Length: 173
Image 1 (tube, one colour):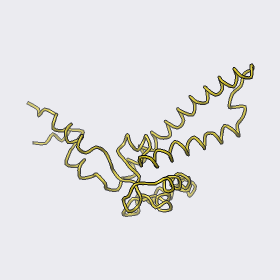
Image 2 (tube, helix red, strand yellow; image 1 turned 135 degrees about the vertical axis):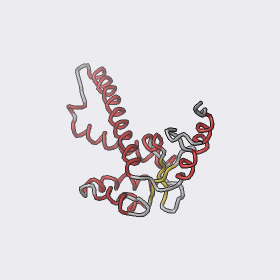
Image 3 (cartoon, rainbow, N blue to C red; image 1 turned 90 degrees about the vertical axis):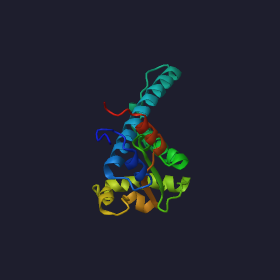
Image 4 (cartoon, rainbow, N blue to C red; image 1 turned 45 degrees about the vertical axis):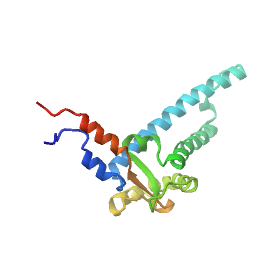
């Protein structure tokens, strides 16, 4: 007898491994990444403000250097996304929701594909969100930036662990 309220359905979880990820899961991972990028950048900004103020002997904030601050934020966001994609195929947000970016043929991402994917990602926004609408319209659920970079996003989590968690659940009395 299967408990339909169980958050982990091992048969479903195992069968989804490697299938193309849906728009809501991808949106969830993106939201986690946006929060992480902003939080880490804000924390680092306060550290920089403190260090520069201490070295100069007068108050300093990155708000005073808006152009530098904007460039630093873009550089940080690029690094935050491109480096983990190149190394493991996933950002923090993608890892939390169980996604992995791969090449369109299923091979691991290399540095070039990861960097290109991150660089062209804004195009999906700039076209009034049409780039993301492609996730709903294409069979392989690839957004515009995935099409340009030759990548796909698939479900990828530890299915073995999901099966073990399910087996550890006690059936209701």
